[in-house]
Length: 132
Image (cartoon, rainbow, N blue to C red):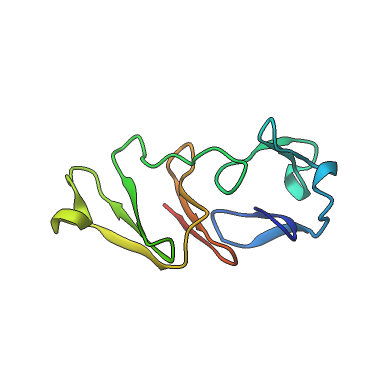
């Protein structure tokens, strides 16, 4: 996680923060042009791709087995995020099956991990993590 107050690493299986660096000298560890940040803690020595937020790419909005994450921005003040299971056509918008994950502040990043085992929603001061 990268913020204006540094960076952190979370274990996506447990939600526990495993490393924190409050260094706000972004030029020392952030390459916005390449979309990479230097890792800390268990990721030290690695260049980590940045996803979501201001300089990152988008997280996957779907898993290989058919789960989809959908978002609805309400006047840039509030955002709804829901997960639609495999086989459901439109979930929330059509009254089908869906799982509400977020209905609060605007979201900086939302999506699945590359392998689909984890879903994250990040806002200005929170990060919610779901694993399966």
